[in-house]
Image (cartoon, rainbow, N blue to C red; front, top):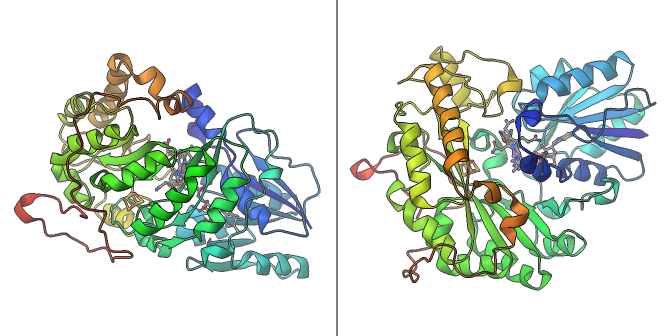
Amino acid sequence: MRILFISPRWAGYKKTDRNYQREMAAYPLTLGILAGLSEGHQVRLVDEHREPVPFDEPWDLVGITTTTYRSNRAYQIADRFRELGIRVVLGGIHPTLMPTEALQHADAVVRGEAEPIWGRVLSDAENGTLGGLYEGGMTLDMASIPFPRRDLYGPQPQPTTWIQATRGCSLCCKFCYLQYTGWGTHRQRPVELVIEEMKTLSHNLIFLVDDNLFVDRDYAMSLMERMIPLNKLWWSQAPTTVAYDEELLELARRSGCYSFSIGFQSINRGGIRQCRVMQNRIERYHDIVRALHRHNILVDATFIFGFDADTPNIFQDTVDAITDLEIDAYAFYFLTPCPGTRYFDELDREGRIFNRNWEEYDWTYVVHTPKTMSVQELERGYHWAWNTLDNNFEQTAFVRERWALSQRVHQPALHGCPEPEPPVGVLGIPVNRSCPDIIDEPDGESQAGV
Ligand code: B12
Ligand code: SF4
């Protein structure tokens, strides 16, 4: 069959700056994996940020991957192909969470992971029996994931590529879709395979796209140990708790890690409690940044505005905290419940969801009514925070340049940090814990996962 896989464009792309666009220029990993699963077929990949969708070619099957914020565009593309008589399969996070909606725009929807079910989708398509919902599940043995077909990505001028070692996260942040799906369960690819894939990469910079590489400390340590001889630079998302583990940070740096993207989420204890970001201890944010800097790992921090406990002071307080903490790079997002999750339903039942345009669920629009300020105040504060830091933050120009960030990896400590304190423990978060509805918080403090 002639199969076309598409990653639809993000409408918010045009609002982003040049550096972020360069970062996004690395080819979507999902398309490479889907191609890897389609051996024996003629496959073409289209990332709509780079090239237009080829509607006028004779495809036998079109597979579209989508997140929530790209689903409007995914549906538009799907509708158009179906009008042309071409069969369409939708998959990804949004169709997994909202399969009934997705089925209105596709012949078939894959819920969960493509790997276990794509073969059946293909044979049904060949036999003319394709249709309905296909369950891919989220229990796949990760050893069976094919290497992504990077040979189909076309010219790759940028030095970064995405790679995945693990899926899932054992933490319970209420706004995160993982816990509402089987995707919360942590699974790992054999280290051997990840290293083998890394060895095939011509790229010097790697983004490990794992939800949380550090759920299983032994696994993370063994992977990082094996990465040392590869001489690559890499970054990944990480929970704040990585900073409590000096041995892990030391190995991370030696293996080429130059930056962690860390969800600090709020400097307001109420927000941390409301959304069960139980791994975060606000009173330790300073230690966390310092620990990472001691190991020459840059801190790329995310903060969320719009928690029920946030008052209009949150913007000034967050800007002050970022400057005071000496955070290297930052991003602000609005609290955005993911459609298809219990958290979304909860806010909906409270009558607080006022925006159902999924295109605006990219964390840069207010979609629910905040509790302690107006929507306008929340929007104004968010923009004020971005503008204030962008204007005042002396390092911003280069910290947004990941390429430049990486140069600092092997240089002396960034901010003259003091000698390391003794390790205070390891991640210690039980693998695959189940998320409680509420957490008991001794002395009004959030429970850290350590
Ligand atoms: C890498 C990444 C990025 C990268 C690159 C994005 C890209 N275009 O490749 C960067 C850092 C640039 C980025 C930016 C953003 N991201 Co991002 N990103 C991720 C991350 C960490 C990994 C994506 C990935 O490669 N996963 C690995 C692949 C293999 O998994 P998968 O896509 O789910 O595919 C599997 C199944 O879903 C299924 N499947 C998927 N598609 C299809 C299609 C078919 C036909 C079939 C059969 C099956 C199938 O099979 C696959 C294999 O098992 C995810 C979190 C995550 N775990 O997915 C967030 C995530 C996708 N990002 C998110 C967001 C919000 C954004 C931003 C909007 C943030 C912002 N405001 O700046 C931007 C938008 C950028 C853009 N161009 O779209 C959210 C989306 C939430 C939602 N519900 O929509 C996520 C889920 C993070 C989160 N924890 O909530 N992101
Ligand atoms: S730490 Fe990140 S991936 Fe894990 S539950 Fe929280 S938001 Fe989701």
